[in-house]
Image (cartoon, rainbow, N blue to C red):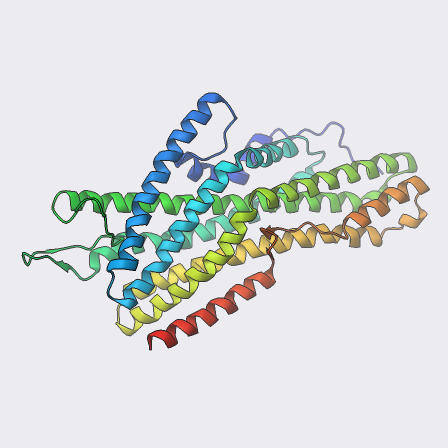
Length: 401
């Protein structure tokens, strides 16, 4: 039995490719770090835009940290803002990780287009688009939760917060990020109003940076899963071929499996530090946001409590999705060996059987995503984050009791 793959051509490969990473491209292009072609003009534009964005991030984060650690007298308020500082720090880490590894990330993105273009049958294309839909769903859910929690945190909560009383008995709205600008004073109008708007603008940039890079992770990781799923489908169809075609098909499977392994390894290499910082940072953020939920509930501030609760949920969803796609990648790479084992490979010609055994041996070391080789992204890692955040939360409650 033969599949009619010789004449198949995916005329929709451009739109298929765009569907995979459209959201990430839109967000990262705005802040100037979407990995474009490596030309002189593109590099100059990227470095200028990156320098401006990085300066704005530091303009927001550093004075906020100075105020928190040297001027803040209220311990409760101090603990509640740490989550925002860690979130901003994560954005800076991700920002520079993408810039440093832009060539590897661009190669991963180009490979997506190549693989959609060179797909051999509609069945393979459907598998790839199914995984792309899962990645898009994860991205949509996370962005919906994050923006619905972060925008009220930066825009609404400062407007309803307790007013600051100045020396002349006048009042003003507190800044979204209470800050100590060491080299100049911002209390007077119109500098204060300009700083207020600028902080909201910068916080939106930080939010877009985190969300854009995060949306890239499930998109390219689920594509890596689709490569293993396509390999698995081709293995299951081996029994349908005659002896000569069987040799060609097994060679094709070996090569495709190798491409899947190399693609997954490249994802893990270029985003390894992002994975580590994300898991550690989200653990810290969650415990302080949980503290914020309890404190706002005790003060009967329902809108603030709801905002913190949505933010906690979005962070948990973030960790779960990253852990899930890492676990899914490992499972799909391991499933190759199981599918091969149940084939009658022992009845294949000797040279074909050797190639099959080679694939089985390769699956002994499954493809995984790790955070700087310290922790593996898996559902077990998600459970560890939940337990760790709960332990720190209990510690914070005891310390402030």
